[in-house]
Figure (cartoon, rainbow, N blue to C red):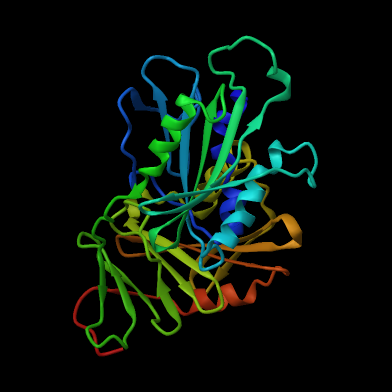
Length: 343
């Protein structure tokens, strides 16, 4: 099961299924027991993962490892133990001999949430001697943390329920999210005006209509200008404000990101189309999900003075409806900083 080490880098399909966005590292906190240490989670020669992944191994070179990734906030779709068990079933599919194979998941309770886990043995390694980096057992775990944050972990080992496995499980039970950093988001004091996204060194700001918008409960991206919201209809909105000097144009930016999505994550982007929508340079595409669902995506970029605004909108449904995302994009306003009449 050595190839499963980097299974996390392909978890975007599961992340989509729980309406998650793309996040950066740095918010995961675990307390390793004596004898365990954190190491890089990268495969040799690979690019940094697009998602927060941490890896722990025993210091004494026992053949074991724990990998953890944060999938994000499930927008209410994974909000209790029943839904978590369904997510865990999805995570276990690659280990099952058939989709209907029965197994017995176990519940996991810890200070900052609940979990579900199960262990699977690699049939190709039964009875064979231990080989470093080739694990006889894999135990996928689905986690629901405080604030509705969903995480996924896998314990790799040569045993099930032995001392090494228990140490890894105890390490996992210490998981928590670090305090989120401050963001450069200013809100109208009345609470009725638009949300204003502003970065001190930039000359423009982004206005987002407040009606029907909810801020993500946990900020899982350390970029100071990052924002993330959900709408009543389940659409996701996230993005950044950056200096225009970092902008290479939408097509070049998208080409680089699409290549990583397809080569590193195995994600296939379909029905790709470039459009100009009310001054925004955009690319629309879909990602097909298990069960016939479709995630419609709209990536939009726009510059104003020395400011580059980058926005990603997405919505998961049974049909690929583009219009709601276009309407949401058209509701955004970019303006120069300074005194303005009440909006």
